[in-house]
Structure formats: C-alpha cells, structure tokens
Image 1 (cartoon, rainbow, N blue to C red):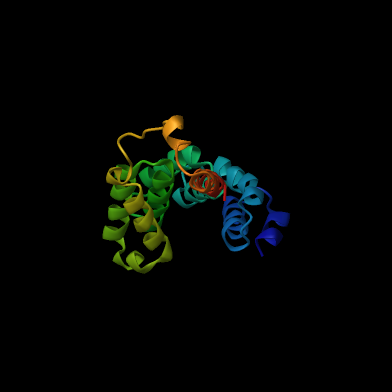
Image 2 (image 1 turned 135 degrees about the horizontal axis):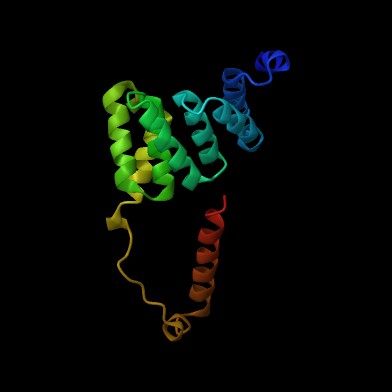
Length: 171
C-alpha cells in the first residue's frame, strides 16, 4: 500500500516512514529500510514519529551512537510519547548508558504503565540488571605463569570458554 502511494508521491514522508518501519520491524530488514527512513526524516525533521523511526532503525542495524542521538531529538519533540521514550531507553542501554536508560524507561512506564507487560520492557529490564556496576569486577589478574601451571585440560577449557564469549559478542 505504501509503495503505491510512493509511486504517485515519491516525497510523501508519511508513506516513506511507514514503509521504512514495516520493512525494518515486520520484515526484519532494517538495513534496507534505513534509506527510506533517512529520506522521510529529511522531508519531515520536526515530526517525532518520523524521527523515532529513523532512530529505531539505526538501533536495529547496530548503530546505537546515532540511534541514541536521534531518539533524544524524538523525545524532545514528543516528551509525552511512551513508545519513543522506550525506544530511547533501549538505545541508551545498548550504549551502556544505564542511568539515562533507566530514566527513559521510568518515564515511558509512567506515561503508559501497560508497557510493563511488553517483551521489549522485560528484555530491557534484564539487560539493565546485567549491566549494573556491581556485576563487573573491579580488577582482574592475568598471569600467564599461573594460567599455565594449571592442568592442560583446564587451560584448554578456559581458552575455549573465552573464545566462545568473544564470538557471542558478534551474534
């Protein structure tokens, strides 16, 4: 439907925005949607839903630095929009800005308490609990002599475990 509108009105920001969102979220192809969202935001830079879509798609492609910056603009444009605040919270959490993410999440839930039941909020709460400063060690000791004084199988298992954790970061 949006493609038909765009065939007649190629610079229609609403159609560009809605098509970009549908491609990114429903078809799970955010990289393909990014140019459409960018064009929509250029045509309607003061429209919060359009700016939100652009920021959210940046998050979906893994560009959380730009996502957080763009979503901060969307929040300024529509501070009473709970979904935009939730998107901002998710992007901030992805950047590791826990305090800001918690603030945006609390604001979103205050505006719309029903969001508490959403999968996005549940996942965000788990992530925020995991990135709490108390979870991270204050220091680590990396001593090769101690490591290789262990039984060879234990060293091999430790190397394999560390390698798997590195790979997990890319999945």
